[in-house]
Amino acid sequence: MLHYTSMRSAIYVCKALSAEARIEIMELLYKEGSSNLNDLAKALGLSNSAITLHVSKLEEAGLIRIRTISGRRGSMKICEPTDTSIFIEMQHTEISRKCYTHHIEIGQYTLFHAEPTCGIATQEHVIGEYDDPRYFAFPERFQASLLWLTNGFVEYTLPNSLKAGEKVKQISFSMEISSEAPGIREEYPSDIYFSVNGIPIGCWISPGDFGAHRGRFNPSWWPDDKNQYGLLKEISVNEEGTFIDGGLKISDVTIDQLDITYNSSLTLRIAAPLDTANSGGMTLFGKDFGDFNQGIKMCMIYE
Image 1 (cartoon, rainbow, N blue to C red):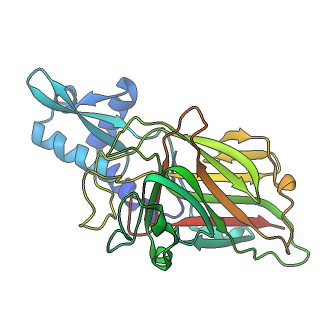
Image 2 (image 1 turned 30 degrees about the vertical axis):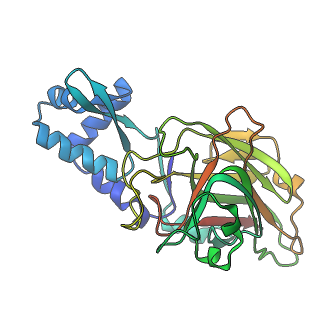
């Protein structure tokens, strides 16, 4: 699911779907699963230049991904949808509920373990050198907008804004995340685990290390053959269990089991271990990288 936390952040999607031809393209792709540009042009009665323009708008909005494969007469581009649903949070829902919201930059972790391939970068440059975990401890990491590792974790100590007498009903975390393959591999599954206060709350399988297009916010110096963007995922723990993207239950861990009170410490660990079925590492995208221009957003709903 594509999740947007405001109407403004969804502006590219809204513009992309404002044209009838682009809606027809999406309908065909959902029906067929994937299609090349020539077949799309024939099915819709459009010229190659017109279909290329429409597909480019859909790709920029993150609605489709494009991969190049070898064909009989050279290479051809295959289009496929990225997700099956879109969720846009309207402004009034943000202000009508009691919620403490915090934004944590991805370099503000307090514990880490990283093994190559790995690295960390600010908006201006890579910190240190590629594949050297020492640089994860450098002070410049606090300005980091991108990090990746093949095996390991990052753990964040989070602010707890609860006051005496307030009870947390749900805690959620959203972040842009993907696998970590050497180079880029669209199909490269990775089991990524999440823990709160040392309690495992669930696992999400990232489908790949995405590079079909440049990340919308990537700085110009970032190479084309490196990780480009991820998927925006939201993990929520409430009274019924732990869910991803608001619908899929990934564990039975409830908010009561986390035992969060106003004087609790609060930590979030994001891990990509080796001893799992899909050991594909992870990449975290922060501000000025990827497609969503955010770090880790935490929301605590309380009463």
